[in-house]
Length: 636
Image (cartoon, rainbow, N blue to C red; front, side, top):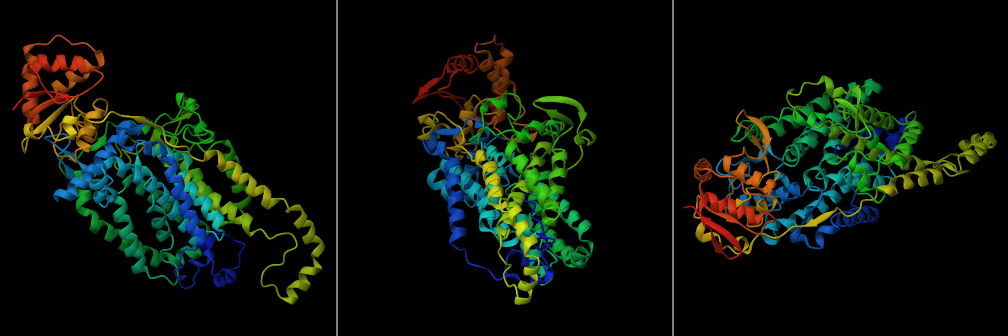
């Protein structure tokens, strides 16, 4: 998640500078004091992390019931793709092959892994786990772990740099890690829940140039974090950079002198970090845009139309305890990035209204919410599933504009999600700092007590009027987030690959350098089970087709491999359920396609359309062999 942390010294305008300088709490960072010493995690920290781990287990609970045979029922194709990616990481490590490219899918052309959501920053380090336990177990372990790790690093950032209350940091961290929009992406898209480095990146950016900090060290650490994030999720890194830009500009506009004083150190560290990140990632980034199977744009900016529906902000997400699948009939079937529910929206607006005058942090959060809410709307304003006649901001952005040509407007709302998480922590912390009625400030002198006694009557009146603030505030925040507790992700059973595949029975038929052609040929629409044949056999044989983004003949990005005549014929036969009339031209094209794929064997396993597919392949290639539990055509 793009976590918009603000400068920790700016939590409250009302705290005197001298008080902040003497403080050992979170507000001391970045105020001109020396660096705070590292503090060992305490019991509260360990309890928070333990709670996040339990939430991660809860979210993935439906997978663990039968982890080898269950996939996301919301995005089964994406789930299988990421299982394939974990197998790719293991294969690359085991065989010492270039992880930036793979020939095990889309044979013989291959797949540019840097130009896809390859998650190399996780799949490569977890290769031993994948080799030992398989990609299904690794996927489930990583998914829950990434959610918990994001919450934990967010908790660390909040508790060390922004709020004093551990409860406030816990609430904010829980929301940043398990917000409805994040949990929704956990349905088959672990790259969008892998946000554990983003709080560290943002905290480092917004401490750059602070007095008493070494700009070289901060720059190096920032560069290393950014470089690694590139191998996890570049899109979320871009959103984080945009959020940081807005935060820095908002800070400079409201504190110009402080910003100017930090400018030299900030720019020096930022330049060093950027140069280091570029040095470390120059070749992978070049490979992404210029290597084999790279592409320009994606289907004419098709995702530019995916803006956030205004009603989505006040709707409960499907995967929360208050959610309902029925809402997906009108909005958010594919993307549910905000979905706060109306109680949280109401509480957030009230919290902003109460905090915006006293807290610069709250004012910067307000700027983030406004800017990225508007930006997420897309080219047309949508309301309750229907397009209005009102243009959105993306109506004025060309579809082929570099860098943004592949962006999805609705995902900009993830910055709003992060801003709300920070706001929850600020609001809880403000309540925790509210002095009980009649309490004297810590460290008050006798003279101060005498002066306070002179205004005791007024203070007592104000205290009675605010006596309700803390319990009511705590109750409002709690009731706003309770409906958003996640439920276990929906999962569905998927049949295992044929025994012929998992037992290695294919080995005598597929010599080195040749391809096994599964029927149906894997694609983003058809052939989900056959894509898993590759994932669950450690990529031991290459397959044609697949589920990825690659270039079409014009160099534009499209999902899957360009269809060959035989794959098109297979898909149309599956859809129709009947065998079409075949000609000698169909048989000639089939032979040509098999030569293009460098095929040695064509394999058909159990499938709902098994009968008609067997008729089709028999008409094209001749009678098959029955080997183990598959139909096999030896085309060597």
